[in-house]
Amino acid sequence: MKLLAISDIGDLNWNYGHIKADILISCGDVSDEVILEAADSCGCDTILAVKGNHDRNVPFPAPIIDLHHRTYNHNGLTFGGFNGCWQYKPRGHFLYKQQEVETLLSDFPPVDVFIAHNSPRGIHDKEDDVHYGFKAFNRYLKRAQPKLLIHGHQHIHSETLVDGTDVIGVYAYKVSEI
Image (cartoon, rainbow, N blue to C red; front, side, top):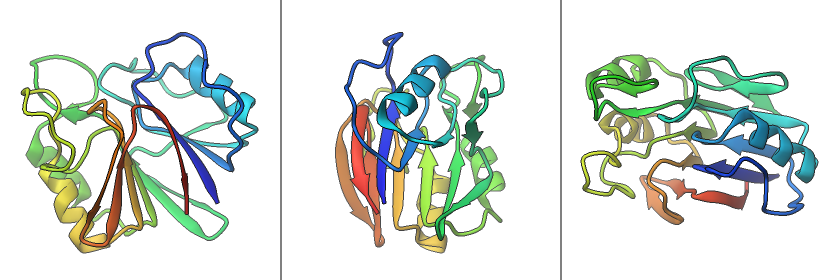
């Protein structure tokens, strides 16, 4: 199954061509209009998304499926997700304290593909007090062992194997197979 993951796109239009994929995944900080335009351009009927720290606090329009703290099954694969990043400023949308994420993920079920805006702590971090990951994601990886964790936020293209999980950092777009 081919996955097209997008994240942190500031453009107001999809400018990356017609990439064929089975599922479009948005890892946040992408406007709803760009998500829908990318899905249409790429022929994706299934659109899974989480919000980023720069997204508006409004529900996704149909047919985008909000994966925050939810699971979704597609062709035998289970997807789950978590939006936002750590609370690096006093106000804003989708900002979490490390302990909040720990509590929310403590009983989150195992999934095959975990979609997030942020990364696990120590994986693809930038030490700038804004772009570092959630410690709870590291614990979730050890406990649940998803095949993939796909994230945005760090503005990086990188893949790192962590405890058997392929952690993929996406900036703009990336195509992956599962």
